[in-house]
Length: 602
Image 1 (cartoon, helix red, strand yellow):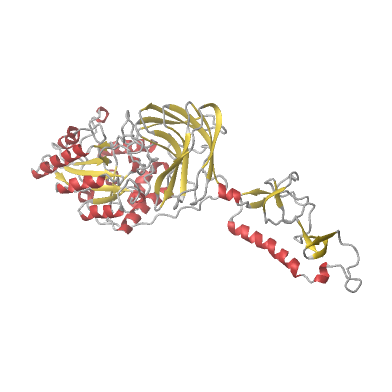
Image 2 (cartoon, helix red, strand yellow):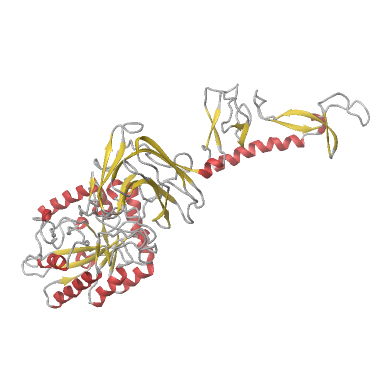
């Protein structure tokens, strides 16, 4: 599966983010195999759609800006100063994030007459997600934006990736329209014959046709041709921009290919305003073209209960296929940035099982590629707690050195670059990479990590593991059936207040011994905090009762005035005077052969 994705988004200005980037050699809209479905659907829609407006009617042009990038704010000022208005598709999770516009800036754009549209909460590939996560992303985005004060009727598919089920969900969430990409002709030869404009009204308002997005290879003439080519037949042309400016990350120097220079954008806006002044075109927002009332908001479902112990990765062995036949495994996403071509393929056998995932990065100019747990709102992204550290492991074979790269989620769904690990060496045989992260940043609710390549090469990965080191250190244990009765080593570790017919036991070298009576054993990290508290209380209450039992029940009967007759144990001396040590079994269902015993003073 060769990913030829639209979108370039530096996740903040500290480091390029996890989002899929366009490549130097392949620049189409497809974020995954689901994008292919979008192209087929869009082309079929074009074949059966009504024709454009009657000949002689000037075409309608809509300028759209995706991803709420911060450099769109000065671009909007140029647009508005020319008397034009645009549609800004805004993932709600991006607002107020580094490298993106603030909520206040987006509200100012709306107040100036521009339209704010939805683009999901975290901008994932919706075609690769389950129905509940799609609804969380799409409906939740509209709820978030509406709550912030935006009038939201239009949607744009992230990565232009869509299936019939995703399209229906967008409609059900109350959007009046949704834009695809790549279904109309642009300068690329392979787009010839697709037509120059969408019909008004569109045959399918929830998958409107548009040319592919502009990038740093486009000239002023290329943008002008999108308009003039549509003039004879009229209709509707949506022109998609992402970054306006240099498109260079200040820390890495990597150029974002989905960038149009400030000069070319300003020249095109000035030319387009003149065309509108002459009556040759009409410039409108998406909402002005589609029309219709604002629909009631529809809430998305709550996220499922997170996994907090054990391996936090879902589908760690990559054995479960994803929703799209040629896409990545379930709960995984193909990611990267910069100018390179990344090819992802499921291969067999894996390190274990029948599946592993191979990534080839070539040709390469800059950036990276990686396979990551899906950057979502809870369907797959591993749960995380601020301040906790996480140990990650993955088996790999790689022709070049690799390293872990980490991202963390905050707020409504903002995914941020976190950190990278030291390099792991190239390896021809299966090798396990292991690293423990620094403490998770404040506000973290989920993390994602994967092995990256930032040079040309091939890597195959399998059998991922991510554990919360805090849960391991807590020493929580739970009773489970067993056939062995470990009895080696010396007592060590945290006291595990776990009750069984055999009593309460202490760990021995990290393993809780079993009992002769039940053959039961316990394993670490499988008990929730409430259960741990309950078990602790169950252990402590009988312990307290020991000291409340009348003395005559636990002492030997005295045989003389002021004297203790008989021998209960060896004498010892302390600051409290002479004492005799005796043994008392902890009364928790009867002392087993390896019960925990306590000493008492007599």
